[in-house]
Image 1 (cartoon, rainbow, N blue to C red):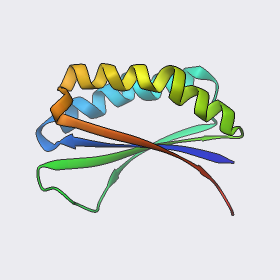
Image 2 (cartoon, one colour):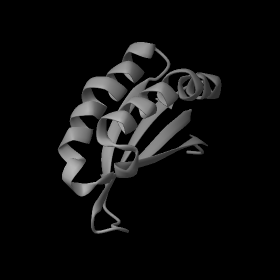
Image 3 (tube, rainbow, N blue to C red):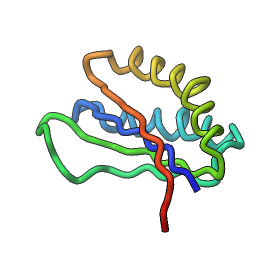
Length: 102
């Protein structure tokens, strides 16, 4: 099983706007892609910047190739959309692919 994790760092005052976008655009597209078995969104509780909120979206798949194709084909377009909506200076993101061990 593989996990495709994208961590978003968002200006605190834009948190609700981000969550709405994540639910209606990012997660919806991930679910509709058929590439993932489950999708989870979670707030990261470790605070690095008091003016920012960190949120991770984790998607599980039986195929690393599915996760990588999603990242290259769809997620990059959606992240550009997010940066345009919230402002490039107000949101950062990075993705990591992981393989479960147990």
